[in-house]
Length: 339
Image 1: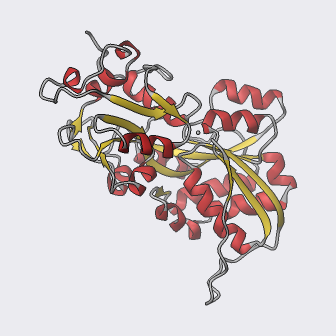
Image 2: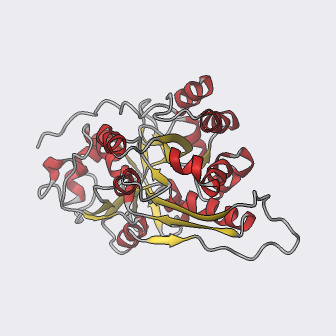
Image 3: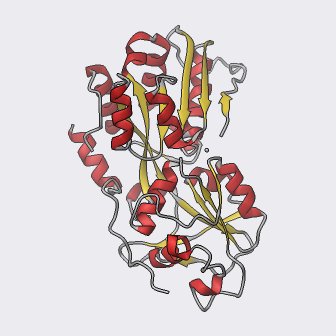
C-alpha cells in the first residue's frame, strides 16, 4: 500500500522562535474550578475586588491551564465563579460565537468559517496565545519497540487509507511484533485532532475513522493503559500526568533526529512538527462590560502567574509575549494575533 510522503508543515505550525519574534514585534462536561481554602500564611494572590460569573468552554488540552488559573483567580476574588467546560476546540467556538461564553479555549487558531459565524452574530474577540504545547504520541507501558517513529510511519498508522487495512504493528514496520494495533485519539471537534491530522496526514480532518475517539483526553489515557498494543495522542500535560503508566514516543524531526517531548524540546522547537502554540479567545463585549471577565483575562496574562502554566505541564510564554497580548487587550485590538 502506498502512503503519502511527509506533508508540508502547517501554515500555523511555526517554530517557537518564529512565534516569539513575530509577537514581540508587534472533549465533554463542564467543571467549576475547585477553590481551596486560602493559605494559612496569607499567601493568597492579589485580587481586584470583582464578583460575578466567568463562562469558559473549549479545548480539553487548554483545560488544565484554565482550571489552574481559575482556582487562583477565585482565591484572589472570592465573589467570582469561573466555570470551565470541555467540549473541544470546535465545540467551544460554537458556543462562543453564539454568545454563550466569555472565553473560548483553543488548541489551534480559529478557522475562517468560525470567524464568519462570530462576525454574523456580532461577536468580536481577542485571540491570545497563552502557552506552548507538544502534541504527544503515547503507547502502552508494555510497548518496548516503538521507541521512535517517523512522520511517514505515523501517516501509515493514521491516514484515511489505512482504515481497515493497517491493523497490526508489523504492518507499520516489519521489525515490530505481530500485535494488533489499537488506536485512541481526539474526536473531530478537537483542535488537537485538526493539528495532528494536518501535520501527519497533510490535510486537516483527514484521518482513519476506525479508532476510539473522545473529546476527553482522560478517556484516551484510560484506553491506552488498558491495551498492550495501543497508541494514542493528546497534549503534553496529559502525558506528564500519566507518565507512570504510559510511554511517550520520540518523533523523528525535520533534522532527522529522534526527539522526545519535554518542556525543553517544546520550548526550543526541536520537537517538531508537533510543537504548537495554544490559545484563548476573549469576547470583546464581555471584556468591556463584565469587570470579572476583564480581571480574569488580565490575571491570566500577567507574567507573575506564568508559573501556573508550568505547574500543569505546559511551556509558559516569554514575558514579552505575554505582555504583548495584554497590550492588545488594553488597546482594544480585536481579531487575529499578528503571528
